[in-house]
Image (tube, rainbow, N blue to C red; front, side):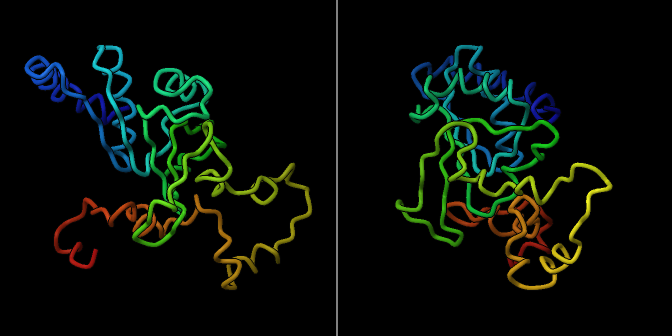
Length: 210
């Protein structure tokens, strides 16, 4: 929200001028990662200005609770939330942790319009793209949520199989079963590997190999 509030005074006046000159142009918002979150917030602002935006985001994080997600769905999605309306495309990629953050335990949720790239490596083909149903289709990026039985405990007196968790981290098989939302090393890989490898906002001297 802070990013959009800081950006809005510069974006809106210029768009007003441009849309005044080209009223028949389609206003399209595109954003990756935090830019996707900003695009989501901007889309609501633009919608109520009557600008009818079309939105495409890549690796968009969660931006609000269930009520806000339903609000976005009601504006941009088909009423059934199973037929893709085309006004909001939320593209996600296998193993990308960012669409699963902030975590659901804090009340954050995803909205509908998801297109899921199931192939982990570049480059995906058309058959690797999947239209997802509803807000959190378990066949799409939501499959990366940690199973509740492995991440929460009823009380502090519950017996814990600590050996089980130690084994998960100390052998290759367990390492690969770490839930996607906790695979932070994929910020450098899956989070950037959409239809091509997207750049990072880092100093040039560190970006030669990325």
